[in-house]
Length: 420
Ligand code: ADP
Image 1 (tube, rainbow, N blue to C red):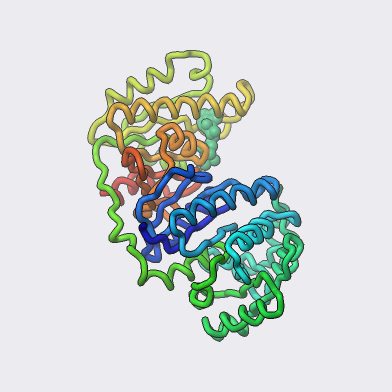
Image 2: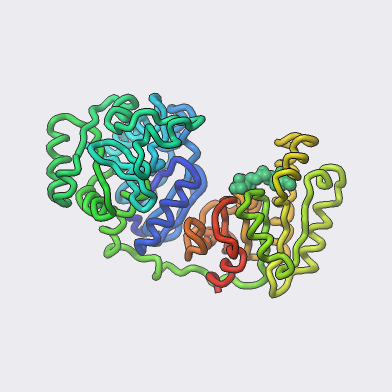
């Protein structure tokens, strides 16, 4: 069986992509999967498999069930250690889900003590004396204070995690962490002896996280943001098959851009390629009133395929989106656009298209689902947070899936320069 150095369970999709890219930056080969994998599904060789769940804000018992099912699959695939990834602002409530998921995974793995830190200095998240800072503000003074689903009003991670856990939560303070990996490992062993089951790790710099990664390498379970994942991966690079060795398929042929995001970044990116790439506009009103409009888009696309990428977009400025949502209803307008993109993607795949750039989180979900893609190998980054990916298991589509607001104005040009 292929060697999987890390099996990672992420509590949301964007966080999963973030951690997947982080592992790859450290030279590890990474496959990302959406949702709990089918039992029968076997992944190809990868140093890391990241499972993207939507478990951050569901009831705790559901989050636990999804996470345990993911763990069971990762273990059948030979994962050597488990990383539970959550947000670098520790997004959770007094009932979970970070604590309950951690404790369920720890019990299943027989973990003695579980180190935890959301520190991610690259994104200005640091932990000092157990207190989480967002930039120069305490977590409780940051915008997370009023988050609609997971308001964070207490900056002390020891207190926050204690409220969610049965086991005792201790701290490995900066004075110890700055002493390096051996000092951290000794502090963890001591906490374990004193019957602590969780340990918040202070970390201010990437070097702290690399030391923490080294100290926790032999533990079955660690939890945190993308920062500690980096620290762990930095210590595993020598044992990895490696991103370079893992072949990223060279997919060529006509390319299609499907844009359903109405974010200002995406609107700017479309403006940038106006006149350069042939484009076709979908309107929710027309999609709902005229049964042939999707077929027309597909017909246009088939005719226009060639060496230059083509664009099919529903993206519209805020006033137009507001109008459509008012007259059609928000759900209906979205569903009309997403269904059209599903049909377009399937028809163009049947016509031989293997390269898709998709703008919009929901839109990407719809397209990936319509194409039957269940696992993605992470490839080169086009813009921070947006890699080329390649579908694993079925047709080897090359997919660039972009959250609406990601990427600079030239993203739709850069994507094809990066891919070559
Ligand atoms: P983002 O990542 O920017 O949030 P999403 O794809 O997640 O992008 O969400 C955009 C939503 O807006 C989708 O549900 C899409 O179907 C919908 N949409 C796209 N174009 C229009 C439009 N012209 N009018 C109304 N809704 C639209």
